[in-house]
Image (cartoon, rainbow, N blue to C red; front, side, top):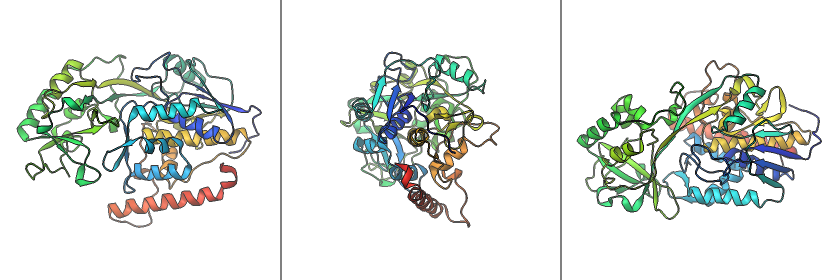
Length: 446
């Protein structure tokens, strides 16, 4: 896609989350000024707790680093593409086995400092209530877009479907309140440093926990809409209502976790992941929930080792909104009816932290190219990033739902392979094709 150079010498970004922060740094690194609007801390969302840019809301994990997993390949692609936030995440990493997890406060403080001190970026702390007229414009307001701006955006987009789902965060527990005599430290299959705290359950303990969970009282929904959930992030109690096996093959699966005290796999395991660098806070992995706070105290203290748990943060549900990207966006993330506007992050339906980085990176690069009158980039569909963007901009969708980057989105290989070999071949092809792509466009990329 090619257009004449836009005369303005700056790019406007609305939203200072992960995608907006990545976009801002990509644009500024190319010598172009940025005006970045972020409404926090003057106006908070239902889930954020600080005014820091790129605050992590749901989890402190950026998921797997292995090339046999799609998140690992996506990180490798982001390294080739020069992601700024991924490098900060590695600097702020804490032990999480084969996953990349960060001290969430250190990470956001690092991003915040980098952006606010950058000579080409001006941060304006105010709510944007109507669509700015400046172009290029990057919209990165995320799933917690303010009501006023979302209504203005929907009017501008021509009455497009108002898409949404309910999302939830998991509780945080103070480590010094965990009974370490009833738990053990290990990473699944012995991979990594063994920094997870594992709360083992026998069958009887699991049955009691399960029955208590499915009968616990939930918070009423703040907005009376049909309960739509993102399948990859279901509230724990909703998973439980689908049957015990949903938990036993999901967040409570014991596979790869041998209790050193018994030499056996427990019947079920609740994992706790370190959430800060000093190890004082632990996240209940997969325990996103909409239970009332008093019910979280009652239900989760049934878990062995957590009978005296103190909660630094309770789980909480919030409404996430996103646009109908297949109807509205081009494959370079620009708006079909106004190519001077780019969208990125979870408002596009690209779900996840590293997916937000990837779309923010591409939107930032393309806004930089657009302002210089150069052709924008469309990444190869054989990459995780390219296949995800192809998915969210595919006009054949009849029921568009949010999506993580996934091997399932990639074009198939030319023959059948066993799963692990197939995934490695996907990874090799993705990185090979991305390197070739970047080599071909290196003159206009930077």
